[in-house]
Amino acid sequence: MTDKCIGCRLQEGSFEVNGGFIHESENFNVIQDWIVPIPGFMVIQSKRHLIGVGEFTEQEHKEFSTFLYEVRKAMKDVLDIQTVYLIQEEDSVHFHVWLLPVYHWMEKGIANARKNCYYARDNMNTEENMKKVNECIQKLKDYFKEK
Ligand SMILES: [Zn+2]
Image (tube, rainbow, N blue to C red):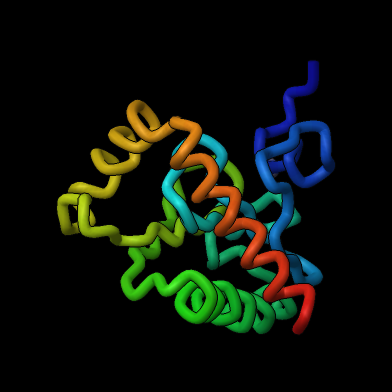
């Protein structure tokens, strides 16, 4: 077994997630969260192992805001997601930003974000909901392919 972090393993392809990479730039890519089946729950990750924005190279720094914009705009235009919470934890492993959609069934507020995710993880792994999750992945992939 490798002692590489899970983010690095995902980047090198030794660990695969449902739907795979939805969109990518030179230094970042985006996936559907693979633990929490909330439709349109996107996670942007760096290809290189790093923890926080402060470690970005000049190139990563320039690229990131465009990439974040593209993903968020796609969520809005293609999936009609009006509100998201952006979350990035520098005490986690491997740089990733959660773009957590806010749905009507959720308790509002960033303090409830984890609770909502746990709820989804424990209760939404149904065939019907996974169909929605996969439809969102496919719509986003189609959108980015046409760009
Ligand atoms: Zn890593």
